[in-house]
Amino acid sequence: METILTMEDEKLGILYGRDCIFVDSVIQTDLTLKFKGEINGNLASNIKDAIWIPYELIFKKVIKCISCELDTYEADKNEIQAMNKSSLLVIQDSDHLKNIPVRYDYNKNDYKHFIVYTYDFVYHVFAVDCELKSDLSNARKKS
Image (tube, rainbow, N blue to C red):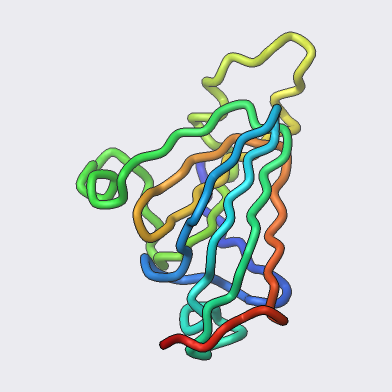
């Protein structure tokens, strides 16, 4: 049975809401997927301040990535929606992951199903791991 888990960053805490994660670029190189942009400090549970925080969200050993425009995604009643509106989730025992055919030399048990809610899009990323790097030293006040 699928279980939705909220991801919590050590520095930022839990990220909530549509206006939390803004993406400037998504870059894929080999099996790495990197999101770059800014996080709304007001919507980070450990920050709660009117600042923009630069970040990189890096997924490692990606085997699949699906994106959908946010309003379309939310209108689709068949899609998973987080009750708490967290912006970063992991789906434990993901049915979708179970049904992905993988190469013979990959161990499907090594992979996780991540969901990233951004201002414009929702991403389902199937990867071994992810890392959120935030740069509080270069945060700027909202204008």
